[in-house]
Image 1 (cartoon, rainbow, N blue to C red):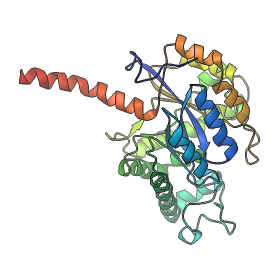
Image 2 (tube, rainbow, N blue to C red; image 1 turned 30 degrees about the vertical axis):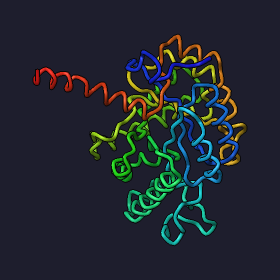
Image 3 (cartoon, rainbow, N blue to C red; image 1 turned 90 degrees about the vertical axis):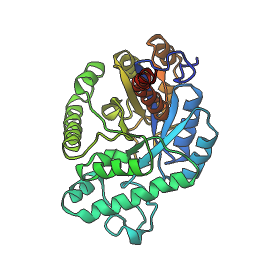
Image 4 (tube, rainbow, N blue to C red; image 1 turned 120 degrees about the vertical axis):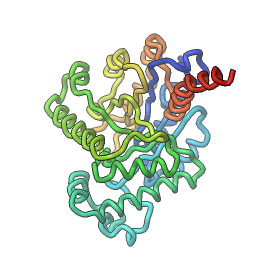
Length: 316
C-alpha cells in the first residue's frame, strides 16, 4: 500500500509528519540490503549513513538510485574504523585501526581532556566530507550510540551542521511514560536510560545556543528505549500517539543480527517496515511520511508565508 508523500499530497502542511529513519546504513551489506528492501515497502525514506562503515561504497550506490530517499551522517567515534589515519587521532585509535574506547570511557575522557574533543571533531569533519565527496547531500546529523549528545560535543556538532548546511540534528527527548504504557518490558533499564539522556539533553540546552536559523531539531524522537524491539506490534501502538509536528522514528533494519550487536533484532524491525498493517494505519491516522529535508523545506515555507503576505499588503 502506498503511503502519503509530503509533497505529492494535498496534506503538505499536515500537522503530523513522521520520518522513519534507518540507522547504521553502510555498516554492512546485510544492513544495506535491508534498507533497500524496506524502502520498497513505502515507509522508509531516510537513513543515517556511516562514512566509516565497511559497506560504505555499496550504500552510496544504493542511495544514488533509490527514489524519494535521503541520507544523513551517522557520526562515529566508537566500534568502527576511522576516516582519518591513526596518526591524526592518537588518543582515539587503537593499533588495529579501530576506535579504541567504548562509549562510557570516551564519554568520561571528554570531560577532562580537550584533545579528545578536538580529535573527534576533526574525525567527524572528515566523515561529513567523505559523504559529500561521494556526491550525496545529507539532510541530518546524528551519531553512533548518541555520542554527539555529550555536552562537550553537541555545540561542535551544531557548528558542523551550520558549516556544511545540514538542516537537522537529532536531539532525543525520551518519553519514558509513553514507552512504559506501550511496552512493559525492561522498565528499570529504560527508566535509567531515559534519565541519563534527558539529563544530557538538559545540559545541551543549558550550555549551547540551539536556536540557530539554519539548524532544526525534530520535534519528537522515538527509538532510544526500543532499540532492537521496534516490531510491528509496538509501532502499531505508537503511531496513534504521535503528536503534532515532526516525529522521527529511528530503527535498525537488517536481514539478520550483526555480530557486534546480536541483541538488536534487525530482522524484526525490517518486517515492521514492510507491514501492510502499519502502512494502512499511517493512512488512517493521516500521517505524512516524509524526509527531514522535505519537512524542513515545508516548515520554512510555511513560517515565511505570513511575512510574505504582510509585505504584499504593505506594498499594495
